[in-house]
Image (tube, rainbow, N blue to C red; front, side, top):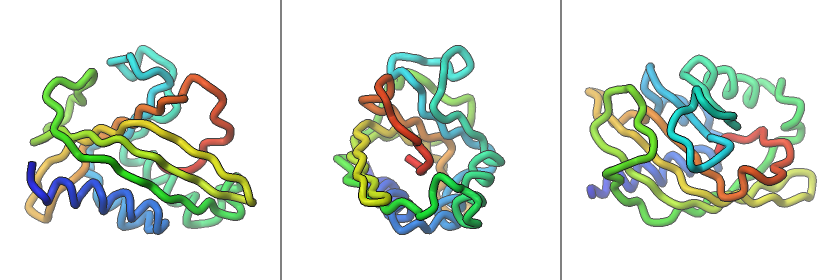
Length: 160
C-alpha cells in the first residue's frame, strides 16, 4: 500500500474534524456514493434500510446546510475528533459500487462528537473506493459500518 493512500484517508478525516467541508467535498468524484447501512451484513443499499445513502448532489446539500447554519440540529455545531486505525487493502468487500475505481481500502475508526456539553462516540469501519484522476485521487465511494448502528444513535447530523 502506498503512503499516498494512507495520507488520503487521514487527510479526509482531518478535513471533517476541521469542519473544512468544501475541501472535503472536493475529494469526491462527480459520480459517487456515500453509504452508511443500518446493518453491517448487507450488500445492496437498495434492499435495506440505510442511515445514509447519498450521491454527489445530496452530499453537496449536506455540506451546504452545515456551512450555511440551516442545519438546526447543528446549532451550535458539533466538534469532532477521529482516530483512524491502520489503512489496509480490501480484496473482497461485501459491496462493490458500480463505479470505476482503482483500489479499495478500509480502516477502523473511533469518532467522538461533542455538542452542548454532551459526548457521543461512534465506532466502526470505513471502506474507501479510490480512483486516480488527472488532478489527484478521488473518493468514488465510502461505506461506513457502525458497530452500534442497530442501537439508538440519537440525532446523527454529522458527516461520518
